[in-house]
Amino acid sequence: MAISDRIKRKPKNSPVVSDFGTAGAPIDRGHPFYFGFVATIGALTAFVLMRALASASQVFVLILVALFLATGLNPAVEAIRRRGLSRGGAVAIILVLVIIFVVLFAALVVPPLISQGTQLIESAPQLLDSLKNNSTIADINKHYGIIDTLDKKLASITSDGTLLITAFGGVIGVGRTVLSGTFTALTILVLTLYFITSLPQATALGLKLVPASRRPRIAALTDAIIARVGAFVGSQILVSFLAAIFMTFFGLILGLPSPIAIGIIIFVCGLVPLIGHFLGATIFTIIALTQSVTAGVAAFIGYVVYVQIENYVLTPRIMKRTLAVPGAVTIISALIGTSLLGLVGGLLAVPVAASVILILEEVVIPRAEKS
Image (cartoon, rainbow, N blue to C red; front, side, top):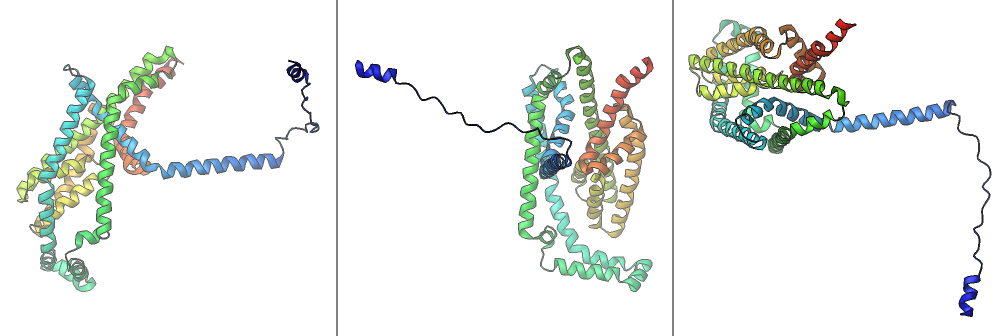
């Protein structure tokens, strides 16, 4: 007990407080060095963020496309839900329909496209020689040698039967293109399914960030914007369907092979903004060239005439009726969106313009009238 008492009574060593001196004056934030240092750090941070965003730009493009498709397919999901199914069941039905369309597209379009492409490659030298029968083209070729140059180039490319491989940069390029396209399509499909399924929850979560007094009005505007995006997708499908019908009958008139497959190709191309009809016209003209030069020229002229009618007559009227967007605004917004964001900008331009017009009509203009 005595030893333990001595241990308990042993005084503890008190910590030694070191004298580090007095604090100096605070940094002068108005000093040029401080301002330059902070500005440099801010610029570097902004540069790193911009580089990071640029590196992830492809991911943002995929997200935007998937979100756009999900919003566009939402009216179809809601229409199925009104028949008594759950949202998951409605999404499953839409997924099955998409898979059926992809299978039909692969079954009806890919085989004739490959066979007709091979036929075009085999008949290309004969088509070029037939162009020389025209006196005007023969005279141009005599002075400039255009047909002869094309003939030599085609012979050098197709001499070993590797035109497709050469066009895609070799065997590795073909494999890379196929894998990249497949991965992109699957990514968009999965993201679209997630967005369709969780669209109501995401909308409700976003509305929680709005003041409670304004939630009903913001919710109504959000639903109207989603409806307008869905109307745009429906309108685009209708326009593409009309183009497919016209080109199918036009292909029948020209005597082209597999007109139904051609119509499906035109339908898919019509859904792509900016370059859709360029691709469709190219494919349609190439298929017609497999028959004769005259059929190819007629196919190209007919497609160009139809595109002009669609751009200046059909599309403005359909968009104005479904989206309440004037025809001039439709064309101008598509041009501006394409110049800013390319393909994605062209895809989003018209629904964004319709949404802006809705906000102007419901928010800005009434507030201006009351002031």
